[in-house]
Length: 177
Image (cartoon, rainbow, N blue to C red; front, side, top):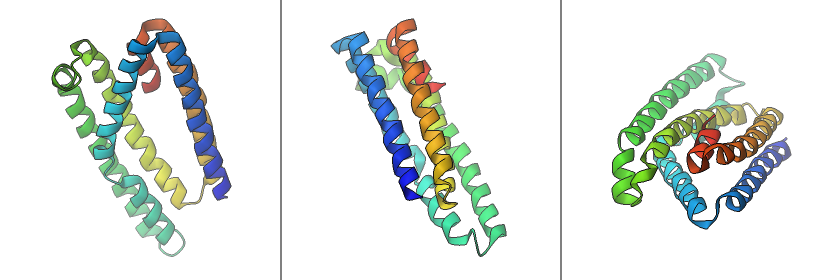
């Protein structure tokens, strides 16, 4: 079953890799660099916003799913509540500080609006990763494979369409959907 999880991760990351190859071809080096720095910035905030909830979900659900279903339900409820609160807080922090981050840290004030849209991407990724951790605890590897496959295909399509529609901003919007 773990093979399905590995296959899902490889598929999702492979499709993301293809999306970024296409993005580089479509955008050119400077604009693609802006996209890369935005995704890196969003990912950095994600590390702080995740609070290890995915791993916590995996550990505790796997530990109690067979022996104490009530406790497992409470753990999942708490994880989902903390995940929603954390993703909202980190998303709002990124949104409200996008002007400062883009102007003073990235030295690209024109990316502020795009970083604000990226805060939505950040919040949704944090929620999704917590859910994947819970599913991993339940050993639902085939379902995780399906989620990763759909995510990878949607990311490939939406980022490519977003770039065609509106460059870096469109790519971030596409990745946020």
